[in-house]
Length: 251
Image (cartoon, rainbow, N blue to C red; front, side, top):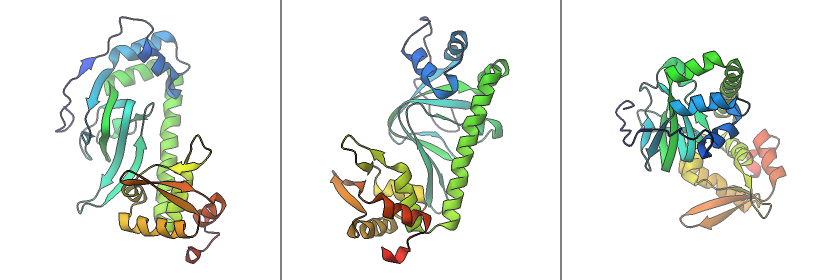
């Protein structure tokens, strides 16, 4: 039980085989890449498997957190929400991502984490994790690097929310989030609601800003079912808006 969240289906990972898919999976993750095989096996013996259904909370803001999580399958949204319902998504996590490292040392969650669709996670308890860290100094350094990178993301988010307008934040976000598809196009596949939550604003504001960018030929909105993917057509002009080199009035 984490807070008031059910964790049915909890079971220990089978480690009767020295080498298997889960071993290879962990060995491929950045923090664990150069660990000795016996250390990976030690970690495996302490992992617990968790399955979450769509919209099921992993933990809630303020609830106790005493585990480190590794995402094997699915997507996790980490977000903060005010008492009035205003929502700010901090980030989305996917396969290979680790989370809750910082929470382990403050012992309570600073945000909410919810599963988007079906998800499969592996969890290791704080005591087990600290025991492994005490034996592996190289692993300590790698996790300090993980925390530092996450802190850098926080600082970028604070800068954007403090110093940039919504159009500037949107332009920066589209440049950061766009993935290059098989056709060589830069695409953002998040919904407008997801984008609004990540920018700390309303969906209607994002919709108007996207419409202006589309009318100027900077992006193209592509209908995909009920959602719309965003294709970047003019990255140079979008970058100009993100950096403030192009005035918002142009759009």
